[in-house]
Image (cartoon, rainbow, N blue to C red):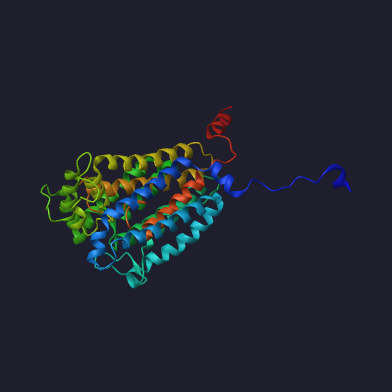
Length: 388
Protein backbone atom coordinates (compact mmCIF):
# COMPACT_ATOMS: atom_id res chain seq x y z
CA UNK A 1 0.00 0.00 0.00
CA UNK A 2 2.84 2.32 0.90
CA UNK A 3 4.44 1.69 -2.49
CA UNK A 4 1.18 2.51 -4.23
CA UNK A 5 1.00 5.89 -2.44
CA UNK A 6 4.64 6.94 -2.31
CA UNK A 7 6.12 4.87 -5.13
CA UNK A 8 8.63 2.04 -5.00
CA UNK A 9 11.94 2.54 -3.29
CA UNK A 10 14.78 3.42 -5.68
CA UNK A 11 16.98 0.54 -6.78
CA UNK A 12 20.32 0.20 -5.04
CA UNK A 13 22.08 -1.05 -8.16
CA UNK A 14 25.09 0.90 -9.35
CA UNK A 15 26.21 1.88 -12.82
CA UNK A 16 26.37 -1.05 -15.28
CA UNK A 17 29.82 -2.56 -15.74
CA UNK A 18 30.40 -1.77 -19.42
CA UNK A 19 29.33 1.91 -19.34
CA UNK A 20 31.38 2.44 -16.18
CA UNK A 21 34.39 0.70 -17.74
CA UNK A 22 34.15 2.84 -20.89
CA UNK A 23 33.75 6.05 -18.87
CA UNK A 24 36.77 5.38 -16.64
CA UNK A 25 39.21 3.62 -19.00
CA UNK A 26 42.28 5.30 -20.52
CA UNK A 27 40.91 5.51 -24.07
CA UNK A 28 44.17 6.89 -25.46
CA UNK A 29 46.17 3.85 -24.37
CA UNK A 30 43.41 1.50 -25.47
CA UNK A 31 43.27 3.07 -28.92
CA UNK A 32 47.06 2.95 -29.33
CA UNK A 33 47.15 -0.72 -28.34
CA UNK A 34 44.47 -1.63 -30.88
CA UNK A 35 46.42 0.29 -33.53
CA UNK A 36 49.61 -1.62 -32.69
CA UNK A 37 47.76 -4.90 -32.99
CA UNK A 38 46.38 -3.91 -36.40
CA UNK A 39 49.90 -2.96 -37.56
CA UNK A 40 51.13 -6.34 -36.32
CA UNK A 41 48.58 -8.17 -38.47
CA UNK A 42 49.50 -5.98 -41.45
CA UNK A 43 53.20 -6.73 -41.06
CA UNK A 44 52.46 -10.39 -40.46
CA UNK A 45 50.79 -10.56 -43.86
CA UNK A 46 54.06 -9.34 -45.34
CA UNK A 47 56.61 -11.16 -43.18
CA UNK A 48 55.23 -14.63 -42.51
CA UNK A 49 54.32 -16.20 -45.92
CA UNK A 50 57.96 -17.06 -46.81
CA UNK A 51 58.43 -18.94 -43.54
CA UNK A 52 55.05 -20.66 -43.92
CA UNK A 53 56.02 -21.80 -47.41
CA UNK A 54 59.36 -23.06 -46.16
CA UNK A 55 57.68 -25.10 -43.40
CA UNK A 56 55.00 -26.50 -45.72
CA UNK A 57 52.06 -24.50 -44.38
CA UNK A 58 49.45 -22.35 -46.05
CA UNK A 59 50.76 -18.85 -46.94
CA UNK A 60 48.89 -17.12 -44.12
CA UNK A 61 49.27 -19.89 -41.53
CA UNK A 62 51.16 -17.72 -39.06
CA UNK A 63 48.89 -14.75 -39.65
CA UNK A 64 45.85 -16.87 -38.79
CA UNK A 65 47.51 -18.13 -35.62
CA UNK A 66 48.55 -14.62 -34.66
CA UNK A 67 44.96 -13.44 -35.15
CA UNK A 68 43.80 -16.13 -32.72
CA UNK A 69 46.53 -15.26 -30.21
CA UNK A 70 45.77 -11.57 -30.63
CA UNK A 71 42.06 -12.14 -30.09
CA UNK A 72 42.80 -14.01 -26.86
CA UNK A 73 45.20 -11.25 -25.81
CA UNK A 74 42.64 -8.49 -26.43
CA UNK A 75 39.97 -10.47 -24.56
CA UNK A 76 42.33 -10.98 -21.62
CA UNK A 77 43.28 -7.30 -21.71
CA UNK A 78 39.67 -6.08 -21.63
CA UNK A 79 38.57 -8.52 -18.92
CA UNK A 80 41.60 -7.68 -16.77
CA UNK A 81 41.04 -3.94 -17.23
CA UNK A 82 37.54 -4.33 -15.78
CA UNK A 83 38.89 -5.71 -12.49
CA UNK A 84 39.54 -3.74 -9.33
CA UNK A 85 43.18 -3.20 -8.31
CA UNK A 86 42.66 -5.55 -5.36
CA UNK A 87 41.40 -8.36 -7.59
CA UNK A 88 44.23 -7.76 -10.05
CA UNK A 89 46.74 -8.07 -7.21
CA UNK A 90 45.25 -11.33 -5.96
CA UNK A 91 45.03 -13.01 -9.36
CA UNK A 92 48.46 -11.73 -10.41
CA UNK A 93 50.00 -13.19 -7.25
CA UNK A 94 48.52 -16.60 -8.01
CA UNK A 95 49.64 -16.36 -11.63
CA UNK A 96 53.13 -15.36 -10.53
CA UNK A 97 53.45 -18.40 -8.27
CA UNK A 98 52.47 -20.72 -11.13
CA UNK A 99 54.85 -19.01 -13.59
CA UNK A 100 57.68 -19.03 -11.02
CA UNK A 101 57.37 -22.79 -10.50
CA UNK A 102 57.15 -23.32 -14.27
CA UNK A 103 60.31 -21.25 -14.77
CA UNK A 104 62.16 -23.24 -12.10
CA UNK A 105 61.23 -26.55 -13.77
CA UNK A 106 62.31 -25.49 -17.27
CA UNK A 107 65.78 -27.13 -17.04
CA UNK A 108 64.08 -30.49 -16.43
CA UNK A 109 61.03 -30.39 -18.70
CA UNK A 110 61.64 -27.50 -21.12
CA UNK A 111 62.91 -27.45 -24.68
CA UNK A 112 65.06 -25.08 -26.73
CA UNK A 113 63.59 -25.81 -30.22
CA UNK A 114 67.17 -25.84 -31.52
CA UNK A 115 67.82 -22.21 -30.54
CA UNK A 116 70.36 -22.91 -27.81
CA UNK A 117 68.25 -21.59 -24.91
CA UNK A 118 65.77 -23.66 -22.90
CA UNK A 119 62.88 -21.19 -22.60
CA UNK A 120 59.74 -23.08 -23.65
CA UNK A 121 57.41 -25.93 -22.78
CA UNK A 122 56.30 -27.80 -25.87
CA UNK A 123 52.63 -28.79 -25.90
CA UNK A 124 52.75 -30.34 -29.37
CA UNK A 125 50.22 -27.98 -30.95
CA UNK A 126 51.81 -24.90 -29.34
CA UNK A 127 54.51 -23.81 -26.89
CA UNK A 128 54.52 -21.74 -23.71
CA UNK A 129 57.29 -19.41 -22.52
CA UNK A 130 56.85 -19.00 -18.72
CA UNK A 131 59.06 -15.91 -18.48
CA UNK A 132 56.55 -13.88 -20.52
CA UNK A 133 53.80 -14.55 -17.97
CA UNK A 134 56.19 -14.20 -15.04
CA UNK A 135 57.05 -10.56 -15.81
CA UNK A 136 53.67 -8.88 -15.13
CA UNK A 137 53.10 -11.10 -12.09
CA UNK A 138 56.51 -10.19 -10.70
CA UNK A 139 55.81 -6.48 -11.13
CA UNK A 140 52.61 -6.79 -9.10
CA UNK A 141 54.19 -8.86 -6.32
CA UNK A 142 57.26 -6.62 -6.09
CA UNK A 143 55.09 -3.48 -6.03
CA UNK A 144 53.01 -5.02 -3.25
CA UNK A 145 56.14 -5.72 -1.20
CA UNK A 146 57.64 -2.28 -1.82
CA UNK A 147 54.40 -0.46 -0.94
CA UNK A 148 53.95 -2.55 2.22
CA UNK A 149 57.47 -1.59 3.31
CA UNK A 150 56.39 2.09 3.35
CA UNK A 151 53.76 1.44 6.02
CA UNK A 152 54.49 1.96 9.71
CA UNK A 153 55.83 -1.31 11.16
CA UNK A 154 55.55 -2.79 7.69
CA UNK A 155 57.45 -5.88 6.53
CA UNK A 156 60.96 -5.69 5.00
CA UNK A 157 59.41 -5.58 1.54
CA UNK A 158 62.42 -3.99 -0.13
CA UNK A 159 64.70 -6.85 0.87
CA UNK A 160 62.09 -9.46 -0.05
CA UNK A 161 61.52 -7.94 -3.47
CA UNK A 162 65.28 -7.73 -4.10
CA UNK A 163 65.82 -11.39 -3.18
CA UNK A 164 62.92 -12.41 -5.39
CA UNK A 165 64.28 -10.34 -8.28
CA UNK A 166 67.76 -11.86 -7.93
CA UNK A 167 66.39 -15.41 -7.92
CA UNK A 168 64.38 -14.75 -11.11
CA UNK A 169 67.33 -13.08 -12.84
CA UNK A 170 69.57 -16.04 -12.02
CA UNK A 171 67.06 -18.55 -13.38
CA UNK A 172 66.67 -16.54 -16.59
CA UNK A 173 70.44 -16.16 -17.01
CA UNK A 174 70.90 -19.92 -16.72
CA UNK A 175 68.55 -20.63 -19.67
CA UNK A 176 70.32 -18.44 -20.98
CA UNK A 177 67.96 -15.49 -21.52
CA UNK A 178 69.95 -12.39 -20.62
CA UNK A 179 67.48 -10.07 -22.35
CA UNK A 180 64.54 -11.04 -20.14
CA UNK A 181 66.83 -11.06 -17.10
CA UNK A 182 67.87 -7.46 -17.79
CA UNK A 183 64.25 -6.48 -18.38
CA UNK A 184 63.12 -7.92 -15.03
CA UNK A 185 66.02 -6.23 -13.23
CA UNK A 186 65.27 -2.91 -14.94
CA UNK A 187 61.57 -3.06 -14.02
CA UNK A 188 62.40 -3.77 -10.40
CA UNK A 189 65.02 -1.00 -10.37
CA UNK A 190 62.50 1.56 -11.64
CA UNK A 191 59.96 0.57 -8.97
CA UNK A 192 62.64 0.60 -6.28
CA UNK A 193 63.72 4.09 -7.39
CA UNK A 194 60.13 5.36 -7.26
CA UNK A 195 59.74 3.80 -3.81
CA UNK A 196 62.61 5.96 -2.53
CA UNK A 197 65.73 3.82 -2.90
CA UNK A 198 69.00 5.55 -1.96
CA UNK A 199 71.10 6.47 -4.98
CA UNK A 200 74.20 4.82 -3.48
CA UNK A 201 72.40 1.49 -3.42
CA UNK A 202 71.27 1.85 -7.04
CA UNK A 203 74.85 2.66 -8.08
CA UNK A 204 76.02 -0.45 -6.25
CA UNK A 205 73.43 -2.58 -8.03
CA UNK A 206 74.52 -1.12 -11.39
CA UNK A 207 78.11 -2.02 -10.56
CA UNK A 208 77.05 -5.57 -9.66
CA UNK A 209 75.27 -5.86 -13.01
CA UNK A 210 78.44 -4.79 -14.85
CA UNK A 211 80.45 -7.34 -12.87
CA UNK A 212 77.91 -10.07 -13.63
CA UNK A 213 78.06 -9.16 -17.32
CA UNK A 214 81.84 -9.49 -17.28
CA UNK A 215 81.61 -12.92 -15.68
CA UNK A 216 78.95 -13.99 -18.18
CA UNK A 217 81.10 -12.81 -21.07
CA UNK A 218 84.02 -14.90 -19.79
CA UNK A 219 81.99 -18.06 -19.13
CA UNK A 220 79.09 -18.08 -21.61
CA UNK A 221 79.84 -18.67 -25.30
CA UNK A 222 76.27 -17.66 -26.16
CA UNK A 223 76.63 -14.30 -24.38
CA UNK A 224 80.16 -13.64 -25.67
CA UNK A 225 79.18 -14.36 -29.27
CA UNK A 226 76.40 -11.77 -29.18
CA UNK A 227 78.58 -9.12 -27.53
CA UNK A 228 81.41 -9.71 -29.99
CA UNK A 229 79.00 -9.45 -32.91
CA UNK A 230 77.68 -6.18 -31.56
CA UNK A 231 81.14 -4.67 -30.99
CA UNK A 232 82.51 -5.78 -34.35
CA UNK A 233 82.49 -2.71 -36.65
CA UNK A 234 82.06 -4.92 -39.73
CA UNK A 235 78.61 -6.49 -40.04
CA UNK A 236 78.50 -9.86 -41.80
CA UNK A 237 75.83 -9.32 -44.50
CA UNK A 238 74.75 -12.97 -44.22
CA UNK A 239 73.77 -12.71 -40.54
CA UNK A 240 70.38 -11.64 -39.20
CA UNK A 241 71.75 -8.26 -38.15
CA UNK A 242 73.31 -7.85 -41.59
CA UNK A 243 70.04 -8.60 -43.38
CA UNK A 244 68.08 -6.32 -41.02
CA UNK A 245 70.54 -3.43 -41.38
CA UNK A 246 70.46 -3.68 -45.16
CA UNK A 247 66.64 -3.83 -45.21
CA UNK A 248 66.34 -0.68 -43.09
CA UNK A 249 68.80 1.09 -45.37
CA UNK A 250 66.94 0.00 -48.52
CA UNK A 251 63.56 1.14 -47.16
CA UNK A 252 64.54 4.78 -46.94
CA UNK A 253 61.81 7.28 -46.11
CA UNK A 254 58.81 5.81 -47.95
CA UNK A 255 59.79 2.14 -48.35
CA UNK A 256 60.16 -0.06 -51.41
CA UNK A 257 56.43 -0.83 -51.59
CA UNK A 258 53.93 -3.26 -50.07
CA UNK A 259 55.03 -6.84 -50.70
CA UNK A 260 58.21 -5.76 -52.49
CA UNK A 261 60.61 -6.30 -49.57
CA UNK A 262 63.28 -8.99 -49.77
CA UNK A 263 64.46 -9.31 -46.17
CA UNK A 264 61.57 -11.61 -45.24
CA UNK A 265 63.00 -14.25 -47.62
CA UNK A 266 66.36 -14.21 -45.82
CA UNK A 267 65.55 -13.67 -42.14
CA UNK A 268 64.26 -16.74 -40.27
CA UNK A 269 62.93 -14.44 -37.52
CA UNK A 270 61.47 -11.78 -39.82
CA UNK A 271 58.01 -12.24 -38.29
CA UNK A 272 59.25 -12.15 -34.68
CA UNK A 273 62.45 -10.48 -33.44
CA UNK A 274 63.19 -8.51 -36.63
CA UNK A 275 59.71 -7.55 -37.80
CA UNK A 276 60.65 -3.87 -37.54
CA UNK A 277 63.11 -4.49 -40.41
CA UNK A 278 60.20 -5.66 -42.58
CA UNK A 279 58.25 -2.51 -41.62
CA UNK A 280 61.23 -0.28 -42.45
CA UNK A 281 61.92 -1.94 -45.81
CA UNK A 282 58.38 -2.09 -47.19
CA UNK A 283 56.81 0.99 -45.57
CA UNK A 284 59.85 3.10 -44.82
CA UNK A 285 60.72 5.43 -41.98
CA UNK A 286 57.14 6.75 -41.93
CA UNK A 287 55.67 3.57 -40.42
CA UNK A 288 58.62 3.13 -38.05
CA UNK A 289 58.04 6.63 -36.66
CA UNK A 290 54.34 5.88 -36.27
CA UNK A 291 55.16 2.72 -34.30
CA UNK A 292 57.60 4.59 -32.07
CA UNK A 293 54.99 7.33 -31.48
CA UNK A 294 52.39 4.73 -30.47
CA UNK A 295 54.67 3.18 -27.86
CA UNK A 296 55.67 6.62 -26.59
CA UNK A 297 52.00 7.66 -26.45
CA UNK A 298 51.10 4.64 -24.31
CA UNK A 299 53.93 5.43 -21.90
CA UNK A 300 53.15 9.15 -21.64
CA UNK A 301 49.39 8.66 -21.24
CA UNK A 302 49.87 6.01 -18.55
CA UNK A 303 52.52 7.96 -16.63
CA UNK A 304 50.30 11.06 -16.71
CA UNK A 305 47.49 9.16 -15.03
CA UNK A 306 49.79 7.40 -12.56
CA UNK A 307 51.26 10.73 -11.42
CA UNK A 308 47.82 11.66 -10.06
CA UNK A 309 47.40 8.34 -8.20
CA UNK A 310 47.44 8.39 -4.39
CA UNK A 311 47.73 4.64 -3.75
CA UNK A 312 51.47 3.76 -3.58
CA UNK A 313 50.87 0.19 -4.71
CA UNK A 314 49.06 1.31 -7.85
CA UNK A 315 51.73 3.92 -8.62
CA UNK A 316 54.55 1.40 -8.26
CA UNK A 317 52.83 -1.44 -10.12
CA UNK A 318 51.67 0.79 -12.96
CA UNK A 319 55.11 2.36 -13.32
CA UNK A 320 56.77 -1.06 -13.43
CA UNK A 321 54.37 -2.32 -16.10
CA UNK A 322 54.85 0.76 -18.29
CA UNK A 323 58.63 0.62 -17.88
CA UNK A 324 58.86 -3.02 -18.93
CA UNK A 325 56.49 -2.53 -21.86
CA UNK A 326 58.26 0.53 -23.25
CA UNK A 327 61.79 -0.72 -22.69
CA UNK A 328 61.03 -4.06 -24.35
CA UNK A 329 59.92 -2.16 -27.45
CA UNK A 330 63.07 -0.01 -27.31
CA UNK A 331 65.30 -3.08 -26.98
CA UNK A 332 63.68 -4.84 -29.95
CA UNK A 333 64.04 -1.84 -32.23
CA UNK A 334 67.49 -1.00 -30.87
CA UNK A 335 68.75 -4.46 -31.78
CA UNK A 336 67.48 -4.11 -35.36
CA UNK A 337 69.51 -0.93 -35.89
CA UNK A 338 72.57 -2.20 -33.97
CA UNK A 339 72.21 0.14 -31.04
CA UNK A 340 72.05 -2.89 -28.73
CA UNK A 341 73.34 -6.47 -28.81
CA UNK A 342 70.94 -9.15 -30.07
CA UNK A 343 68.47 -10.09 -27.32
CA UNK A 344 65.86 -12.36 -28.90
CA UNK A 345 63.02 -10.13 -27.63
CA UNK A 346 59.70 -9.56 -29.37
CA UNK A 347 58.09 -6.24 -30.29
CA UNK A 348 54.96 -5.97 -28.10
CA UNK A 349 51.66 -6.58 -29.97
CA UNK A 350 53.44 -6.61 -33.34
CA UNK A 351 55.78 -9.60 -33.37
CA UNK A 352 54.44 -13.12 -33.84
CA UNK A 353 54.25 -15.24 -30.69
CA UNK A 354 51.46 -16.67 -28.59
CA UNK A 355 53.04 -16.37 -25.14
CA UNK A 356 54.35 -12.90 -25.87
CA UNK A 357 51.16 -11.33 -27.18
CA UNK A 358 48.85 -12.95 -24.60
CA UNK A 359 51.13 -12.07 -21.67
CA UNK A 360 51.46 -8.52 -23.00
CA UNK A 361 47.67 -8.30 -23.26
CA UNK A 362 47.37 -9.33 -19.61
CA UNK A 363 50.06 -6.82 -18.57
CA UNK A 364 48.41 -3.93 -20.43
CA UNK A 365 45.04 -5.01 -19.00
CA UNK A 366 46.53 -4.66 -15.52
CA UNK A 367 47.88 -1.24 -16.46
CA UNK A 368 44.47 -0.14 -17.75
CA UNK A 369 42.86 -1.38 -14.53
CA UNK A 370 45.32 0.68 -12.48
CA UNK A 371 44.93 3.85 -14.55
CA UNK A 372 41.12 3.87 -14.62
CA UNK A 373 39.54 6.99 -13.19
CA UNK A 374 38.41 6.38 -9.61
CA UNK A 375 36.70 8.64 -7.06
CA UNK A 376 39.69 9.99 -5.15
CA UNK A 377 41.42 13.25 -4.52
CA UNK A 378 44.51 14.16 -6.50
CA UNK A 379 47.86 13.31 -4.91
CA UNK A 380 48.57 17.04 -4.88
CA UNK A 381 45.53 17.56 -2.62
CA UNK A 382 46.98 15.03 -0.20
CA UNK A 383 50.37 16.77 -0.13
CA UNK A 384 48.77 20.19 0.36
CA UNK A 385 46.70 18.77 3.22
CA UNK A 386 49.84 17.49 4.93
CA UNK A 387 51.55 20.88 4.63
CA UNK A 388 48.56 22.67 6.08
